Length: 184
Figure 1 (tube, rainbow, N blue to C red):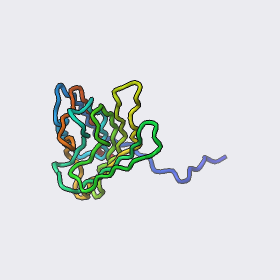
Figure 2 (tube, helix red, strand yellow):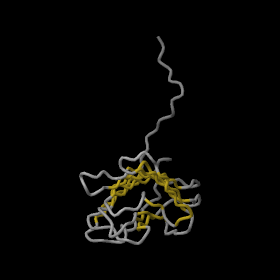
Figure 3 (tube, rainbow, N blue to C red):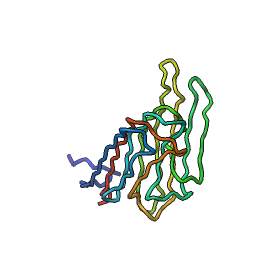
Figure 4 (tube, helix red, strand yellow):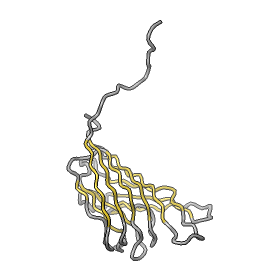
């Protein structure tokens, strides 16, 4: 009896990717997380964490390689607690990508960015805000995302700020993870 033949299977190879990780914790109210500069150009970037709240109503966001030009867009889909209507909240020609809708409550986010040269940098944002009250569910964030329209550069630095200038509150946390070498 012959050996089984695998049809349509990709060629497998061992990769030796580079890995970078950074954790930030805010001990006071600040205008945003510290900038992150990568020691190598990453292929995949993960951002996890969130503000514990805002000194006002605002939303945290980011921009790349110190570029605050009008070549970003972002979009969020939200629905009020108990509601059946989904609101589409787009922001075009912006100087940053927002991580969801503005709030004065805490937020948790999980973000993935593919960072390949010759491709625009698309960001997927999963996030949820709190309500601050056990008897009052928060609006649901059905998804958010954005894009940096730049095919000439890979992201080498990420800066964080709030869209409206309010500070994020003490206890806010950011975990940055990045991998490179996916193509070697």
